[in-house]
Length: 289
Image (cartoon, rainbow, N blue to C red; front, top):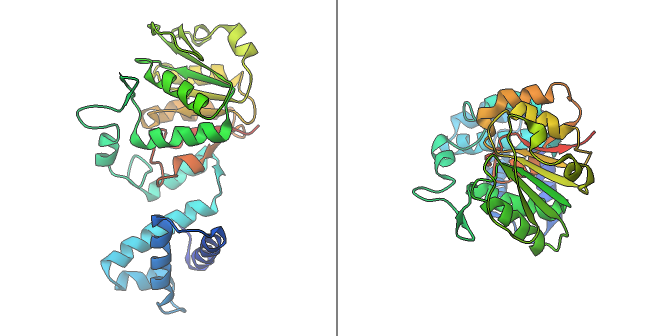
């Protein structure tokens, strides 16, 4: 999808400014930046399109204009966006990642020399996802969380602690080829092999687990078939998150192809800190049908 052209861009700028005003309260850093750039653009020749006027201005305004234009283009798409549209519009961003952030940020967002810790265990989450999951869990209030790829067990414990923090009476099920030998309230660790997706969790557990579900794929093996297995159990309103998705794009596309209307990318979370500031690039899905 091409970036918004002049008439639509000016209309979207006015709409966003009206939203900022309607929200009231103290504007955040982003809104302050947006207000400043909008004021500068309003001082340009009203007849000439912004994209023609701005390059003749200072380089800083050209950078600001591009970021504003990128933001408003995706903002106008709404919150729940088809994956194919997200993939197509990624060309307007950092090559290969569809994000506003360079490789240096993506390489260091889990930490350098060490990773985030939870209960003394390595929590292999980016700093962005460390902030995103609590918001998603608070909004979704999942009755069941299924994690494929336990690792050290830290993330399962973290999810359970977040559910407890939000007074959610739910259960966390986490699986790996080598079962984590830990016990914790609200958490059940399982042993299973992604090569045989039906072995990941007992059928009776999947059949009885209450919805809504939050399913996190973080095992990096046989991804397409693992997602297809869970599709049989997911219902509208459930969430499916595919972590480290840049290396799984072919599998995600293959999984979604038979279900073009079943899932939407929830851009509230993928773009909360900027486009695809998450390890789950274009892959925080809500099932909608």
